[in-house]
Image (tube, rainbow, N blue to C red; front, top):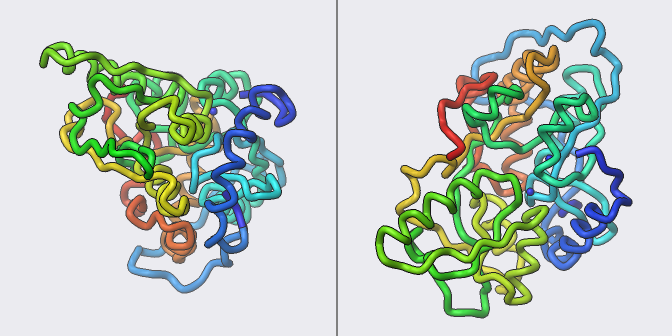
Length: 312
């Protein structure tokens, strides 16, 4: 069982904060989960058969460091601080296809791109695929996101539109697309004569969730998958509030990619391996297991830098 990129050991202060912030979520987050490893490849579904994966000889047998953040259910901790989640299962299967070993390392989100550029990390996920990011890294699209607000299940705040965030204290992940999104929202708040959003930045989504629980923020704006998963597993501690009115905002509802260094030889093999896992049903089984089948994409959408969206 298992519970939102940086060259820091998990024993550094920033990572200890991230782990502490997730412990309160972990106990209920993992109650309904099974083993961290995905099942082996099975019969193909409706997707066409994938082409054989060609892996450069220099990559075979390598151990590669993957930067991740705590972004349930893609990555999360169980009550024993063991790391798991949909991405962790996916990397295990990608490694099997490619003949490499992916070793996840929990880091702060805003250090991922520098870590990829310096070579400290060979991959990272999940990152929104935006044109701005494509200038410095490559992203292999593998999942579809959407946005919502996580709020206290005990309170009365239940926003239904992005305009309902005006005048409230909102937490977001530092370095995420929500930085640009909330900037646009504050422009709209001002134009409508409403008070601005009081924005609070956190090193990861789980730390922001903890701020909701303690009443320091009114809600956490991030992808609906972690918000929905956390609310569902919380026993009423949290509620997930879908928001209308944001679809025209740059950075809203991103396509997620596995990030690699610009022009990395790993990008094309990852693209091919993801298509194979979609074709043989493994990808679907992982997403079904973690309750995020609505975030699946088809093999035709698995592309390197395939998104034309802007971060804002």
